Amino acid sequence: MKVSVVTVNYNHKYFPKLQVEALERSSCDFDFEIIYVDNASSDPESIGFLEQAARSGRLKFVKSERNLGFAGGNNLGAASASGEYIFILNPDTAVQSDTLQKMVDYLENENSRHIGMLGPQLFYSDGTIQESCRRDMGFFDLVLKRTWLGRLPFFRNRVERYVMRDFDHNKTQDVELITGAAMMLSRKVFGEVGGFDERYFLFMEDFDLCKKVRKAGYRIVYYPQARVEHYHKRLSGGNFLTMLTRKVFWLHVQSAVKYFWKWRADG
Image (cartoon, rainbow, N blue to C red; front, side, top):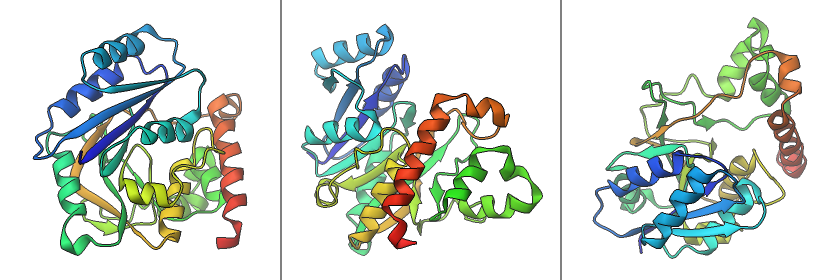
């Protein structure tokens, strides 16, 4: 098996069906498997589809009795993987028919040695390219990105540098961080760095994995020739008081504190 696509579902309704159907349209000269981990979902749409797809052999279905979060769910899926490469993929995505082939070809190119992780270009349904790469940041950069403060003229340049708006998103380049919506790495590297740190329930575990991959001496590459559509709802911006009432906001804060405390020695 060449590739194991690992996805975590939590009440994603119809998205798993769309994602699996897109994967099945892939044109590859190798075998790949689809592994879905369910984090104790309650919606009948996603559960019904995944159970039926598992019975028909379209995918492996791993059910967790409790919500393990993004990190724990992906680690559980990776433990069932038999592929040479693990492709972490959000359920609200759709690969293009050549995405898997292009990513594997790039990783196996003789000039691609020491690449530990490869990120495709993510784009929204309207064709806009998602800012899926990041530079190493400080805690205040995250605060600016997630609140109205980042729109103030005094801070705007700092936010733009963090989210790499000066970056040519149509050029293959080494980067420091990529978002966890779509990232491919070898099963060997994933095991070497210990997979995702399960102390993060949601948010920052993808950047933490990037830091571990880089610390182990590997490169992280953004590769826009491979593309993935992302049906993503933006969380940033909006009224600050409204943000403070959202559980997801405080989960992000908790994860950010853990991240910066863990990596404080690296500056």
